[in-house]
Image (cartoon, rainbow, N blue to C red; front, side):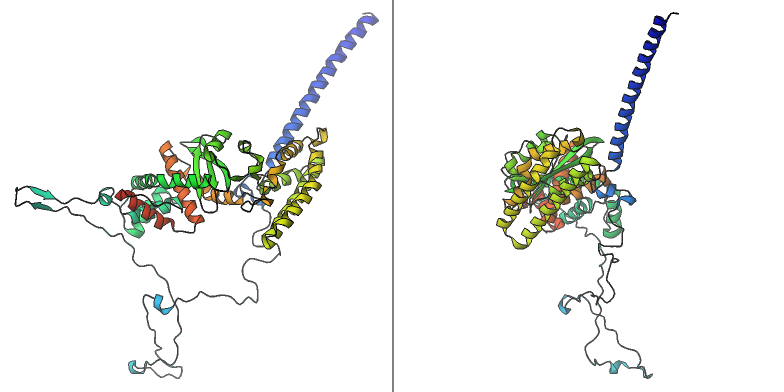
Length: 471
């Protein structure tokens, strides 16, 4: 082998080695990126993402249980006077039982004639449930023979009686236990039998809920129109399951009304179906399904922004700087809103907001630049710049708040219901739970009795009368 052949073999081998090293380097970079992505996912919790607090492991709690921010233990502190249960007036007492002393400390035994009050008695009240049982009412259709023609005529039952073997009060109680208190079908059956002596089955519970859903059709449609006609509303969405398949539960809320709708997904078309032609200012998170709304009629939730900034602040380099700047912006924005809530000085709120805009918009723009160091924060920075006017709508309009906490609180009961019941089983079940959840949440917002409203609604529906609306 001459020198030229050896050099050729050497060059070929070197090229192979270089290609192998480059391939290994690319693979290492891919694996490092994958590890980094997995680490970021594992670091997510309720403080830096939209995950609920219930998903946090024990080690992720913000503060240890039993202590508040001051370091004191929960409950009354030493020296606290304490507060007992207030006594009801005598007119509200159903039964009075007198207790007389039997003997004096000196040993004298009191006779019945000596039981004369020597001052005001010490009062102690005990609240107890009476024996609960359903009242069984038998309706008899009597037959009477006509003296004219000799035929027999039978009395007709009223329509509110023929529709069900259960009265509106019992049906309303079962619906309330199922929806508001989230008691399972079997537990409702056991509770009704044990506490009310009512003979029902799981199928009966389903039938009652179906009847309640039918009765609430018109009130639910009225709620939808009221929400769409409001000046400001809060909108949010969460996951749902129907027969094990993924669905989405949408909710729109005002201060007095709530409406839920189950849809196939969380896409923009579903938001359009829910909101229709509303002219309201919509408070929501930065989910892309709301991007069709004009920025002048949007308010982006600052609580969501704070969690997103917290996630970035836990990163490194430029991402950490971006997150820390965002957290400072959130803190100052929340403080401005807190001052406004105390003073109601909207002019001062607008001045503070303008100052924050002038100070922080250049900072956000800097992290939106296409640079390698901005890799992990560039997307959020650009999204904020694109939706910048929608961050500050709360400063201009009296009915708008900077957060979407109202919607998240309203959705919480529905989320718990979904987790306990595994969602719905049919399209009819979806319509039923939409109406029941809307009614439940609206009654809670209006501080009215869900049980009393359902009893009235079921009574009216059984008679064929118009069902009362949740105005």
